Image (tube, rainbow, N blue to C red):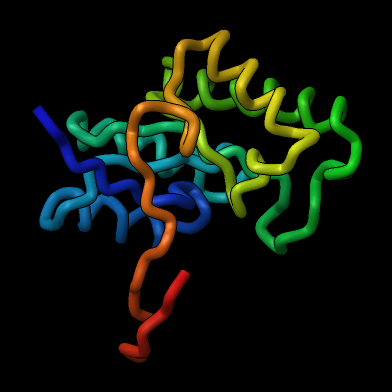
Length: 153
């Protein structure tokens, strides 16, 4: 049997994004969300997810803050590995469990020097990781900005 997983990234980035994801889950086709544990509304996202037990919540590893400023030197592989595992700990604090899947903000997990750390963590925790599991991933998405203009991500 085949399933369609529609994942919403950036859960926890803001209250508005959190509400939009929950609304798209309840009334739309979103089946999964990826939580950014180091963003201002991460705690709220975790609480809201308890109201939607059918929503699969994975971890959207984020190496920047709400101002898109790096919280870790992306060229420092070991520092990124430490931050990755710190975010796993934070996810468990917020959610009380492990994530259902692993991906990353701005696809930093694709970077050659960081990919081994992400694969290690995915293997250690038994998680599917975006683009490294049997699940087919389509990265191009047409959305709309508030004004209705088409946005190709």
